[in-house]
Length: 133
Image (tube, rainbow, N blue to C red; front, side, top):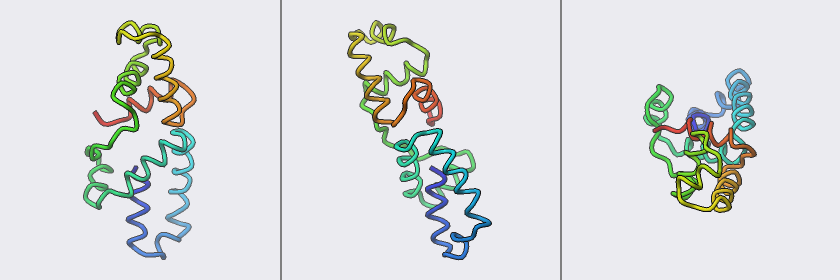
């Protein structure tokens, strides 16, 4: 998210700073790493959120303040399932807790993985725990 905000702020400063190899190279390296770790869809969504931040919001987020509340890409039920995945529950345990069939929970987990561009439950757990509470 901060990379998106930085890109917008840098462009407002002018091409001299934005095109500078000295300032831009670390940003590009960081962006590549973040995209690789988060997955393309999640990175793109966070980057787009950052591009919409004003300067004060971006500075506040960078200083450890709360990010403006973002819309989650998941349904209410998918968010519940994602939180339970982060809590370490198996699909069968989630089904019992949510009073759903295991097949329904399996489908929810697959939808979450697909929507977020993830390939593992560990990525879901990391994403859930990284969100502001």
